[in-house]
Length: 261
Image 1 (spheres, rainbow, N blue to C red):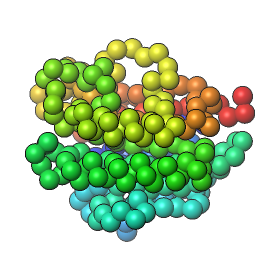
Image 2: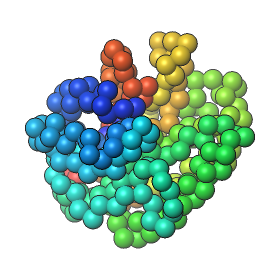
Image 3: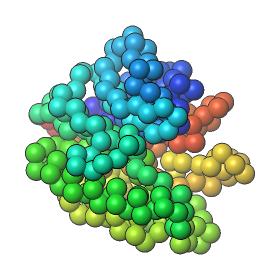
Image 4: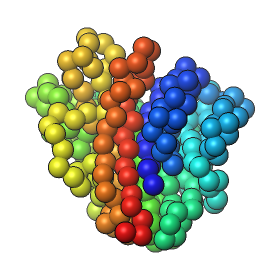
């Protein structure tokens, strides 16, 4: 099975690209972030026509997440339980898979904007709430995947110019520590389970020819629980959608699992 994550930066704008990509890649589960549309405007029929189901948590103008899957999900959860938040950043569903169901979470983690912004402490508190919830989720669902835009580049190798970015949002020590606390629960960064070429990124700024210069960052991740780690056979960043006209500034990340091997 193929599980993917993609911050599409407006599903309304990027829907044709998403549908074409699904046809070409035939992923089984696609987690989307930054839908930027209200619940009632989610284009469910377009996915149904391709043979997919969907669960979503939309929000007009900003945020919004979805799980698009070949089979319908159950036990759907929107947002982090017990964490009061008007922003729609989390959706989780349990999906059927060989060897047993897999709990899938699509996450759009806060950006933080800058270290002196009030959005930065919100980001850290959000990550703390996510950690506490994931600890509970792992107990209930050992077969767990958390896919999304984390807005954290975990290591300097995930940044095109670490010196230029030093001390800024996305790479600050508290953010990286918050990300590592998720790994400490028993999750692994699927991309780093495999040998990768250097300078592999998933996001490039629209400005200053960021993509053409490969001036990017790896901030989109697939975290896999210990129970599924041995089944993960690859994890790659698909840069092709970023080359399209009017692309998202993010590229999909795809992890493949060989269940029952």
